[in-house]
Image (cartoon, rainbow, N blue to C red):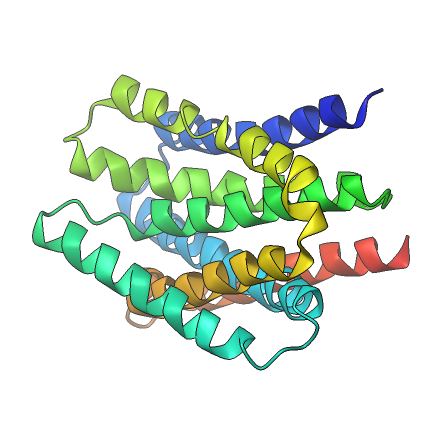
Length: 240
């Protein structure tokens, strides 16, 4: 199978988890209401834990390594946080802020680029990295659906179409990493670190506060479970 076909299949499969997560959110109704409320906050925290895990075990280590452990990685991460603060501020003023969706796209695109770079270098780890991306996209798709539903006043069809339109971002980013950025490892690393700064900002500014419930233990446990799942997947990748 040609490498470019493999990249499209892996990234599209991982991206398909976005609308699948949205579809699950659309048909899932848990009773009683307090349990559904608790479950939703658990999933928000779980997605935040996965994002934090992706930053900690994938994006930052690979980004730093790709940049040759350059000190410039630190200001690039800070720049990422500042840029996404500005974007969120702009969207918030227009009442279109969607931190779960922003975090998901921020995570999905640079990891797809990294996947393309791995395939270009002949690494056998592409399938496992695609699995990690898919595992992240599933709860993030669930959370983003609820978030977009609130913004679109409950229009399910429009929300699912919006999420479907995000799927091609993965193959485009993967092919970009394969054909262009694989030869420029420092630039590839800078993209990962830039995205990491933005993700960390969104986690602590929006996602973590949304997940909190007074006198409930499920959200923090969900965050730990998400982080541990990301760490487990990274260990699988390293053990191959």
